[in-house]
Length: 375
Image (cartoon, rainbow, N blue to C red; front, side, top):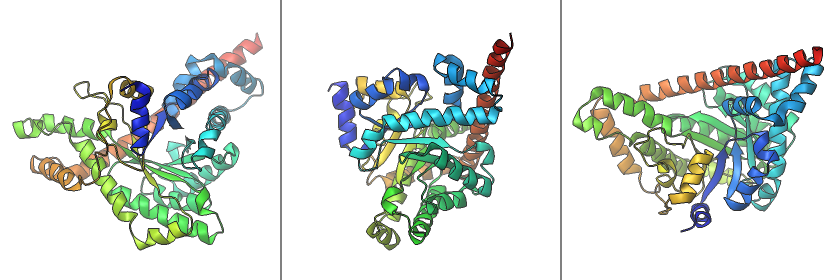
């Protein structure tokens, strides 16, 4: 099977392939357009770490940073203008995909500051501001699925904003996210918005679960514990998909669907394999299911194209087996509730650190250009 056929087969199996990387260099070089036309990529997600690396390692930002420095822009202003410009350009590149998919795909995500992850009102205010500033119908605003983020998700959807819910680790939190989605759409309908124009995904993080659970299994060290390595993340995602199927077969959803709403698709995030002992396409091929998104780093995408297999739906009907895996993990001493608490806290902290890194990077670039202009 050729690389194009493999990626086509994945698309045909109902998986929307999104790229987990965005930079102006990727846009300006034509690489993003090539991935769309040749690699079946139908969306893109970004994060502060990606932006920080791009800004310091590419000349594509130099002119904009020079102008920002010349007018004395603050670091926050510069970060916002740089990231918004990239997202706007990416939205334009994906506009054809957005149109041909009927608004399902062709999506580009931009996140609210993770520093606001525990502030509902500030998150909602910034989501509304970013939505207005980007001013593209195919943008999605990323809001973390913290306890404080849940009402902000509802509020943003109620205002007609498409939302990428990020940092979902547990099935319990995924159910709360879906409830927030339903409530948001019900309020959006009451507010007079066209539900067909509102899109949402729930970004369920995958590889980090195995990283954390495997570390704990190795600390336990028994044969039974060690035999369970590499199983928690896929089982967790499969249980999340079962919860999705359940929630979207309710009368509550049926009423929203009748009003024109689209389902909030599960999105498999963090799908790059961190343990070299595992197949490099593990979190793609083992999570094939209809109606999902898989946002993957380019390295994973190319690995899949090169040697990946597409065996068809690997998720539907697997909930009982996945639950048995969870039961076995509990039996050997893994506290899964604690795993998910730790992962959410670390997820917010990592995003926060990345945001600080982006600010420091942009500050350094502004200072560099300001110094040059002063000579």
